[in-house]
Amino acid sequence: MVYVVGGLYGNPFALSRLVQLFDAEPATRKLFILNGDFHWFDRDETTFAHIERATAPFVRLRGNVETEIAAPGDDAGCGCAYPASVPDEDVDRSNVILGELKQVARAMGCDQSLGALPAVARVSCGGLHMAITHGDDRSLAGWDFACDRLDDTWRDGLGNRMRTLGVSLIASSHTCLAVADARLHEGQLRAVVNNGSAGMANFQGDPSGLFTRVAAAGWADACDEDPLYRAVVEGADVAAVPVRFDASAWQAYFLQRWPEGSAAHTSYWRRIQGGPSHHLHSAARGLFQRHV
Image (cartoon, helix red, strand yellow):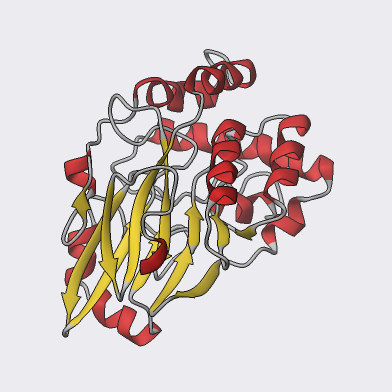
């Protein structure tokens, strides 16, 4: 059984809930994998140190945030590789946030260890072989698994690339909007699941985070939280599961660190309060079936 936790964004309440769910899982073999951007919003050393300690027991992969924290110099930017549709002001604010994180990580002496984390994990669950990364199959900060690009990515040969990689599932998170799609390719099911963000709201009107849970058939319904949507891929249950943390506590925690007028508040506060303009029917595609 595998938890894929992308985009924690420094939310300690989300992490606490995830660990609670994970510890309650009855499976005898289980992995908790953070696939990047777990330190976003960790503006001060106390906050950064807490998330660093709390995530240390688990498998950690670097995303663009961890990679750029370790980059030399002070002007590398966030490494988000935003598409042209993202306004320059949003990019500038992300670069400001990354600059603050870099200063904190350097002061703590953990910047290079974060940059040395692996970028990809390959895992098997039952008969399912999967790859876990932050971006897409071609780039750590790639946007090919974004909601508005995924159809084109399939047409561009994703199924063939997955066959070459020897995987039937790729789990990612970088684009920060959840989507999951499973399609038949040459008689074999191939799937992509992007959990959006474990630490922030993912759907309009719902403050919950989201993570990807992959479980062998016998453990499909063993989680204490019901999935929002799921599919069976190569005999394994692949599910998008909500992270129902204390939203009021998280909002107060965020405001203490990123008050009105700060870069993160301007970019993210509206989403943290009310969720993005994104809905379940846009996220669950192909053979993924909604369960709410």
